[in-house]
Image 1: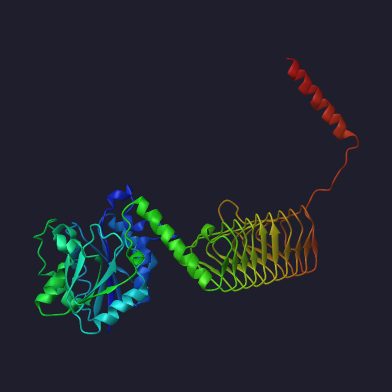
Image 2 (image 1 turned 135 degrees about the vertical axis):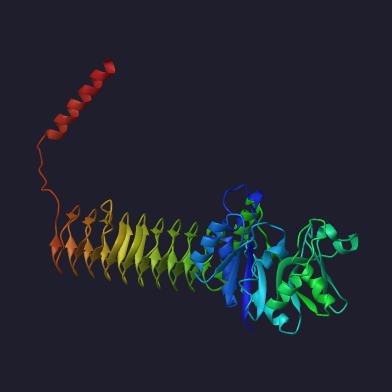
Length: 451
């Protein structure tokens, strides 16, 4: 059975105190909207429809930037969740399959949970709802079940009796149903409730009125965490990081001070990787088996191969590719560069828009001068070359295999294989000049002090 996903992302999120739409606030380096879209990816959704409202243009752009096949619709007036889902009907009018409704401000529902809903739906139920057993039910909608465990109704807190409010099995808002059935039921939903809104949850009662069975499956409460404020956003970040750290360690990585390591939503860590304290991973980072990421390093948009060592205090920027066994040391920054197997960039260097050959050794203070104020230019450093300390490589320039630069050189011309490149002024010693100069300066200082 085909499946599509509708993600509700129209809310203003006034409690965020922000000009930015709520669903575009980030958790672990990606907007909450992207987290919801990734859940849809995990069940191979045929169509993903984003219902926009507040900040519609920005929400739609974020969705399409992430997945160009995503479709967006506008809910011009926010008249409840049922009304929001109805806005997707024109996009899905010819879709034959199940649809799952997700929320852009509930970023942690797992793909495995959505698949479990689809599996339950395949048993012949008209509607399947995702619930959770709440530690503090507060004002969540309650899931009312029958004696045989089927779902009888969803009752919003405002409309619940005292008996119904005592129920702790609560509604997450996530619903699965046949697409055609869902939109038929939504056409029957009324707004005669305490809020004057069209509730998506009313489809359960309407399905039961048609003698269709409904079901509810339970997930961990943490999956259903909604974000409505900056405080919630901070709590969501903590929840994500705790889960990501635990998964990394369960998969064979060592985190020597786990609570100080910060992952992005898509970080990939191999087995036997060692991550020292205070390491931050931005989006799009893969670290392969046996690598070591030393303390206070920052990685983003890069690939670290087997047995490489990074840091401490290193920064890897987007486009960095480190080969097997590469060593990147303290206070080194690398951007848009390929560093081949066994090469070393051990300290105080900037390597940008470059290729560094295998087994090359980059001396301290080396800089690839890649930007002329308008254009970026490339530097190529050959295999087994040795770049002397404090070398400025003014791109575009290349250093051949087995070549060398003298320390303190400014290299503006290509260096052939096996050649030594020198680019510095001849040293000229002035005998006695240092003492004369210092005496003159001290005398001037003394005279100024007396004034």
